Length: 505
Image (cartoon, rainbow, N blue to C red; front, side, top):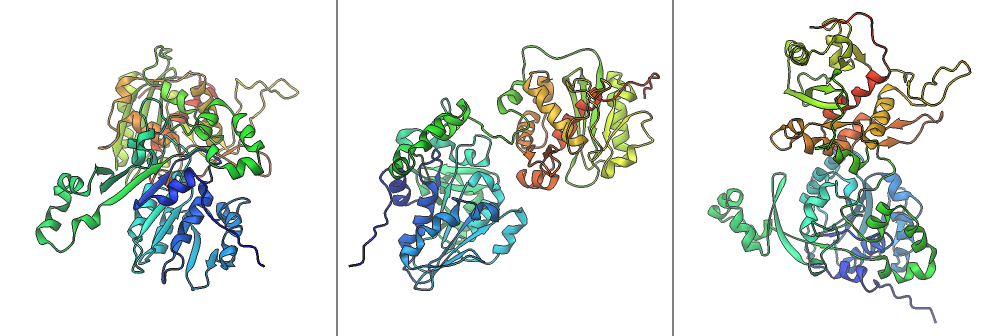
C-alpha cells in the first residue's frame, strides 16, 4: 500500500498564518520560524478551485533560485500534490491546469509587466526588499473571478527603517520594539490616502474618516465603498514554533544565538527596534547620534560641499561645515545655472569659506561650475582613490598606501561611515529641523537616504565597492540620495593638500 503523506502547517506561527482571514497579512516573525514554507503552503488551500492561481515574488530572480530558497523549498512540497515544475519559467502546473508562478521585481519599472493582470493570490517573500510603490501597484492587480476573495501574504524579518514598519507599527510596542501579544493576529481596516493610511477597527470607521476620498463615490452610489477598504493583519512567531527545524537541525538555534546582540534581538526575539546589516556603510545608531550631540565637532575651519542639480527631480544641495559639524544647509529645486553659482557664493560669503575649502560634484551637470569657482575642488565620483594621511599602511618609502577602493566616491562613503561610527560628525538642530521637502525634515531625509548607501560585492581585484546609483534610487523610490552625496564629500578635504594662496568669493 502506498504511503499516505500528510502535509499540514505546524502549530503556532504556521497555523496562525494559514488561519488568517485578512486581505493582507504581514508575517514579521523571527528567523527560522518557517515563513517561506507557510507562504508556499498558503495557495494549496485553494489550488483545486478552477481558475485559481497566484504569483509569489522575490526582489531578484537569483533570490528565487538560491539554495534553500523559494524554488528549492517548493520542490519538497508541490510534487506531493502531483504538480509539475517548469523550472525555465519558474512555474508549477497542477493537475487541474491551475498555475503558481514565481517571479521577480528587480527594478521598479518591472511592475508594468503585470499591467492588466488578474492575480487571485499574491505573495511577497521578504517584503522590505520591495518598494512601497511595487507593493501597492501589485495589490491593484490582486483580483479574482474564481470565487476566492483575492488576498495577499507577505513575509519579513524585523526592519525598523523599512516602509513596512510604518504599515504594521500598530502591532508593535513603541517602547520595546516587540510585537504586542494581545494584538498579534488582530485584524484592522485600512484605506490608503496618498503616502499615508486611514485606519479603523471597522470598515464603517474608515469610511467615516475618508469622506475627502470616498465622498464622490458615496454620492454616485455606483461602487460599494466597503469593497475599497482592505483588512490587514500582522502576526509574529518564534523559532520554537518550528519544531521540525529544531528536530532536524538543532544546531540552527545555537548558530542564531551566537550572533551579535542586534542580530539576536531582531532575528531571534523579533525586535523591530534593531537594525542589522553587514552591508551598511553607516551604523544606524551612530548615524542617529549625530543629531543633537552633546559635543559639537567645531574647529573654526569652514568648508562647503555641494551636490549640483538643475532641472529634473534632483535637488541642488550646499552644506556648510565648521570642522566636522554640519552648520548650515541650502536646498533648491530645479535650479538654473546662475542660481547654483549664486547659491554657493552666498554661503561662501556668509561663512567666509575659501575656494580651496569648497567642493562641488563635477559629474554630469556639475561640470558647468568649473571655471566659476577658481581653485575649488572638483569631486569626480569615478576618480581614483586618494592617499589618506590617516592610513596606517605605507609603502617601502613610508608613504601612505592608496586604500583598496573601486573609486573616490566609494572611498569617501567608507571614510564618512567610519567618522560617523567614531562620533566625529555632528549636525546642528537648525539643519536637522529644516524641511527637505513638504514631507520630510532634513533629519528624516538623511535617515531615509542612509539606508540606500550600502556595500556591494567586491570585484575580481578585491576592491571595495558600493551599490550603483540606480540601485540606490530604486531603494529610494526613484529619488537620488542628494543629501548623502553632499555629506560624504566632507571627507575629500582630508585627502587634498591646501594651496598656498587663499581665494574667496
